[in-house]
Length: 227
Image (spheres, rainbow, N blue to C red):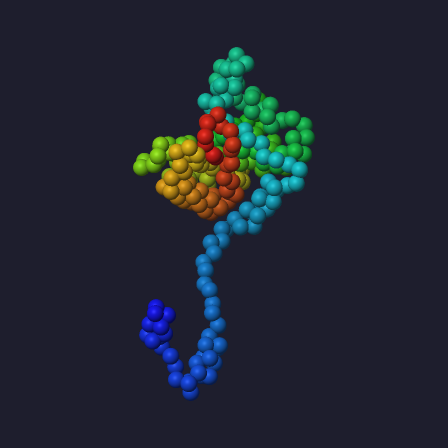
């Protein structure tokens, strides 16, 4: 009955008009319009992404916060001072042949502006070895209001200006993480917030010349979480 009602209410051309109707329809091709956001850094972004994905090489995650560095230093009886963190990071970036196995290095903000104990910029040492410098840009996890004890990642406020400065300092890709709770969800709200946050982060990063990478971590010493 629904089909019959629809047929009766539809516009049906007279038999004499059928040919003209078909010709008119054929003369109007269907077009689809879409807007593509092209970053001013488009070519550079592609080049950076290809370098990071070089066969046989991986990404060195050395973006430990100062607090995490402090734990590593404490395990060998050292204080968490800037000088000790500098010495630790110098060890990470100066092994001979590092660039044969590492294509990109994720840095903490302090590291991006830091030099080795010999006074050479860490960023310059990486670039000389064919390693792309990257930067962690998220500001950590905070409780997500209205969710089932879930969280979301903050850091979008002021991200554009921070990333512009990071680019000037030599960074060419960025890292952002998000967390989805497994036993308590994931709730629809948490999934939407994570997707929206990652999309905004990616768009802002590309606008500022940084290839966006969403961190995928399986073990961060937190049970029942997916990163």
